[in-house]
Image (tube, rainbow, N blue to C red; front, side, top):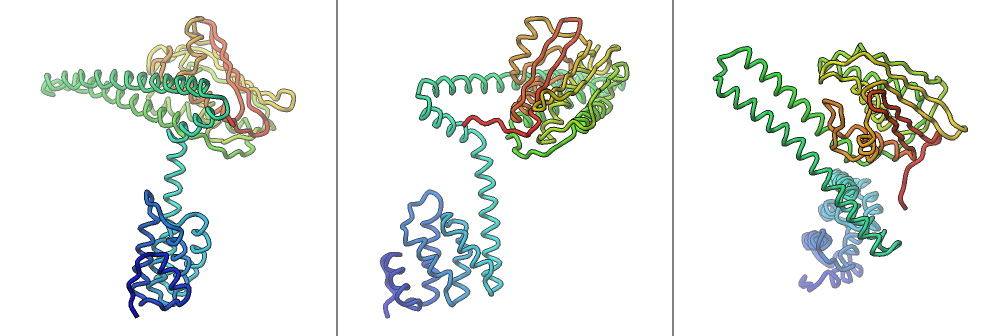
Length: 383
């Protein structure tokens, strides 16, 4: 019998009538040909998937293994049933190949999900906005997003360039000295360590700001969230050699006060707000003048949690406060070691829970930050 078959359509027809119409080696080759057609970027005929469905039950394990190897390229409608069938195959080689293909598919889906949460998702959202609200609104939204992006990148590049310039200057001084002056070498090394530490904090904050918010919500005690946030601030100051003992911190948080949140995100938001309150008393990068910070949490109307953080630090002028209330990332305020991402990260995380942040301040008197969070966990959505 001649095995010359011009197309997969003919192969499917022949194999449907007789599973042994072709030698098993030819059947295995058909599977490989179909897999190539099903690969991303190819236009596959329906017979490609039909052939894999047909040969997934082939009598030869070598053919079934070829199908198992091709599982990851199958469309969703065919993947699940064939994956279930082949991961339960009696042949260990077939089963192993199927399990690896399933894992490969899972990794690919995770990678795609991450990609879709990035710039591609922005484009999708803009397309949906244009469809529902019209092209003018969509163009306005695109322009606003572009300006925000340019501002974020521009501010971050400016900060990193400033650090790089300072480090370059220190290195040049060190080279000129030839390393013979121990005191100078130690001083310059200390400066460079400080610059590197700042750069690390900046990059960490940029990463946190661009991470997709978690959708997980669990009931947490406000007191636990606040305690964890304050401990994080104290540990960070200690690691940097900062003595913040001159600033007295007090908290009034009922132990039965709970809220539905993503713990990590809200702890991070509180950490940034408490850290800002401490740094409002900064004399320089490592010293603080005497002062007080008072945190009070309460329930409002049984629907909201209000957390107020008040300090008697340097405060903001009217113009500075207007700028701070914009929550634009990368714009540093009076904090001497801040990256400009603390407040934007806090606001972003709280807004993702359906909450809000309000800031009031008087220069040379202090600042009060008021956070509102819904008691029942919510997720802010646009659509």
